[in-house]
Image (tube, rainbow, N blue to C red):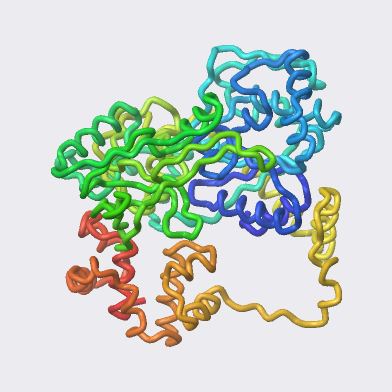
Length: 575
């Protein structure tokens, strides 16, 4: 299923499970739907299964949103207390659409408890009190952590008998609430992260629990010893102790003065702790010149995103904020940023810290959701199904992968998920065919009816008198061209288009090949840091007799980023 087809289905108001492989565009599709709802005057409830995931999407944990906290059971008294809390009751009563991200990490009982709370507060017997539920995630990724061996569901609020959940039945799709909601499965089939065929085959083999000797032989050349690991790439480990050890060791080894930055917090202690748990920036951060860092959230104006890597090259002379040079050559002064916990526009808690963390090493858990040009990984201590798959799928291409070691579990996913995934795919294919048979006029009618039922506004109603013109569709490349001709620089075009840098650079390269932009105009894209290496990179393309990025990236062992290679290739006139 394509992203557009999934959007069309969500816009009808049906409950949806949005899934797909890493890099299929789940987050992008969700963001598109959220923007659509907001454009029509509907504010969705945006939540996630964990604090880290909630921080990424700018929402609350589902536990906080529903008022269930860390409870694993809710009595009738507990339900009444939640319903009697004005703040919670107002929030849930007003909600029309509930989005839960990273649902793969949500135990079944949590979904059941949220369902019970929503039914009670909305005084509706329908699943989740009639809310549209958008469940987002990939069950091949990290599973939920179960607090105890057996967890009994609450039968007081469901038309089902109580049951005991065994550890093998630990996933959200086993919840009674999931079955009652009957979500339409939208399985995204496109791939936007990996374009390396061999690497995709390896990831697909792991996903099918079919990883074998032939796949291992393809990974063997990517194995290195720690001393030979590229210094400018992040290292992924399965345990915090390894991450802390590497980062602490590296920052101590750097010469020069260190600058410390302490997190500032406001609000109730328990709420501050929720924010701190979900924030990738540490409570106390020490930086020095040449420290490897990673930005930990998205910049509002597109200067950086969560996962942008760079190096500290200096400190502001006035406030001592670090100056970071990203791998693309841009210099950014990292200023403090806020992480805010809000409820209906009221700020409940705030933490303020630099949006940075040391990035010589990070955990696999905290890497989930990131896209990396390259990474060094130690998978020798993988202990959970899907952990190795999450780590490997962060990297775009095999040439950007450097392995320190692995164990057998690194290439395994939960066997139950392989079976249920086949069912999800079959259901998605059936839904794709069913919605394809719906006339566009009828689909639009369903979209409009859902907006009206949610109390939203239809743009067509406001501008009905302006329907006497024919809209001319402008290609996405020509939209980029218009901004380029208007004198906008790369960062401004990225911000205006709402696309990533990689996409905009690809547009400019194609526009140059089409003769719409002169090669001399593109010189301003080349950062000063790249100019000394231009000749070396271009010589590598010529020596290898290729215009593909992969072989050249592998030749330099990650010394140049994919963006730098693209820019150098662009100046050669290659396609």
